[in-house]
Amino acid sequence: MSLLLPEGLVCGVDEAGRGPLAGPVVAAAVILDPARPIAGLNDSKKLSAKKREALAVEIREKALAWAVAEASVEEIDRINILQASLLAMQRAVAALATPPEHALIDGNRCPALACTAEAVIGGDGKVAAIAAASILAKTVRDAGMLELHAAHPQYGFDRHMGYPTAVHLAALREHGVSPEHRRSYAPVARILQLAR
Image 1 (cartoon, rainbow, N blue to C red):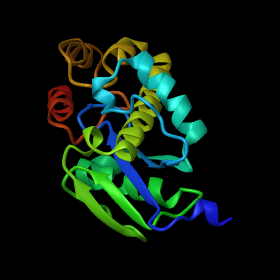
Image 2: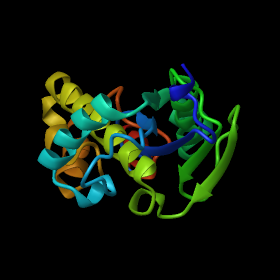
Image 3: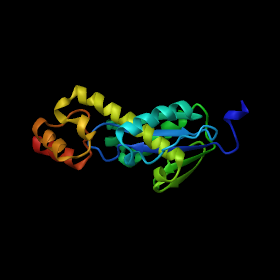
Image 4: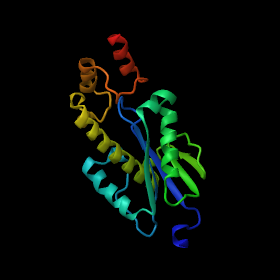
């Protein structure tokens, strides 16, 4: 159907979870349907959790195509967070049911893609498709962190989503490092050193 492939099909791409000490980095790619606009799209960090959840449902219903992918804690530790973020973005774009002709990437670096790509600094606040990707990436990552919380409640992942808050750092000192923690991150590496 030619309707799914208009001239210049563009996907927005963003990631969530570069800063946390635990859990994967998650990326999303979204091709919005101009015929089905979504009101209220914005940088996921500027939206309440409730608003993000509602928009995530609408994005999945109305987008021409969307995909979410991740890079694991092991990959983050092996290739570093920047490369892992780019890898997750690459996987998300590759997983789109409709291949885009162009990708707009939030930030200042582009992953290697099968289509042309352009980095947009602050893109999640400027480009609707990138905002949609930021919302999907954040809601999927947060849901994953809630699952990790169920497995490791002592760290309080449900409260800080793995970010290095005082509560999280105190829990790390008390309980040590879990398999979900990024060993290449300085606060985690320090605790591993002390444990030795």
